[in-house]
Length: 108
Image (cartoon, rainbow, N blue to C red; front, side, top):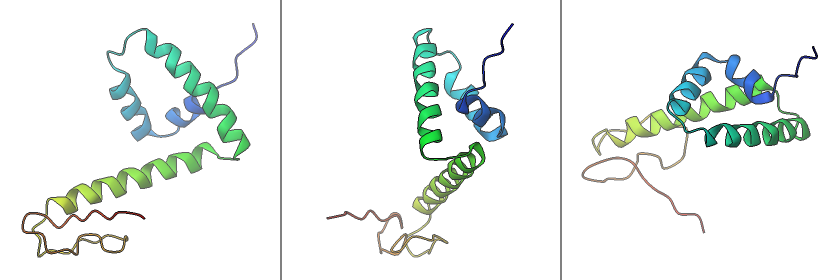
């Protein structure tokens, strides 16, 4: 029996407990049609990662950085307006809003 190669998505999920838990939570109770979507995503991701030379480790590190940034933004949005957050982004949490210190910037 010939063994199928592991997809980038499967390698990514198995390589990070956080990704594994997030994937399980997101796919729990998903309809049968979700399997077709997952297969299409896995196929696309295989090509995308190969073309852009992205390793599963680099993808997992990027995911974790995004999750941390999002969590910091949420924490910041819940602090009083006179409190400064430890954000690495300019102008983050520096506006004098009366309810939150979260600021939105528009790009032109």
